[in-house]
Image (cartoon, rainbow, N blue to C red):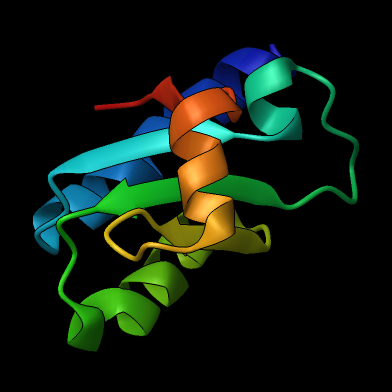
Length: 94
């Protein structure tokens, strides 16, 4: 039941990113692996979201989930984003 509710909330949060202009939303980390704890944050990776909308949208998604988020912008080229794209276990939400 808890996992089903979390899945619904993750999709609602992904819709917040989509409404703000994101073209792709992925889940990664413990939520994607099914190893989340009560104190875990939820890790999202997004692309297509304009930089000026990033933090406001992240805050809106946190409001939906009532949990801390870690959001990575896949449009940036960093060692971490390259790792996520190649081996990071991204699970597409939309």
